[in-house]
Length: 307
Image (cartoon, rainbow, N blue to C red):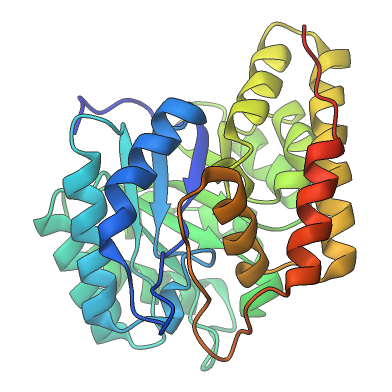
């Protein structure tokens, strides 16, 4: 890995490539890394998260993927964040130890969502037990209440969290509650923590209130366009930044109406990059040919800014 830099900008939530019969396909990871770096200018990745179907994979598969991303990303990627969350605390701890052993840049943990924590203290207790297994690795909380049903505000979670979890570095904030995010950033006056937004179609709004960057699936295939938006925002060209956000939103609004999830993301990435991502794992069904044709036509119809 390159010398560690601050985690900011775009982070691609990586897809897990699979063979037609549903086995993980490690053989295309090298091509995938090169594509992200050379074509999308994205050098940070988030492995085994929602987009990567992490919770549908076995512990062994998750380890194999983490190892392959680390191996192929060596000297090419700036950050490889491994999601190690699981419903089972021992499994999550095992994955945390493994991520530390292979030299991951950071680990992230989702809130357990079958037996759910009901308050801040219960959630922190779970996160603390996982983080303790990788005491030298930066730790990030993966906040995604639409999927977990765990709606404990991150603002509340931050109070005293460094005392509980010394390696705590920040949050992947995948929720539309911008008030909660704003309060987190307002509390972070010393810029001690990193806040990465996870709702791609609202990234510009999050940047406006101080988000450091973003983790998302669209950065696999629209990374270059979103990098242009970040650059426009950084130089205070809000008009141009809005154009990029609106066009990304136009595509996502279109495909969401058709039904857009992990399976459809795999299909879009396949036709944009030329790298076969394969089907999703059951119970998800693969994208239909009708979806692929309509999504491809829509993406090809978008006229991006040239300035």
